[in-house]
Length: 96
Image: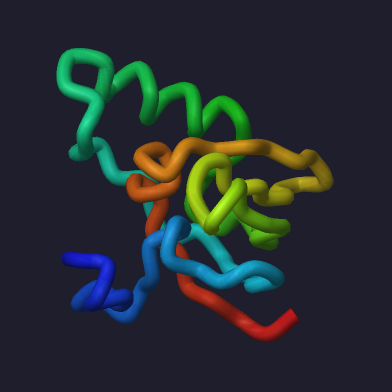
């Protein structure tokens, strides 16, 4: 999937592509990505922080010029994620 193609085949949207203020439910946290040998560690850390299937989140904002970090709120806690981390999280947007 590319940035110009926001939706995955199953109808989900990657977290880094959601707009500010969006509410969504996590479908999955993908193991594949851009972290090489640390891929499993990054995926496990996201899950430990609460980024689990079924969890509800809200996109709070983005860094300068819409870049890193991406601020999200999940389970009452705010987190700043790098775009590469957010690319691992597949969501289904829903109205607030």
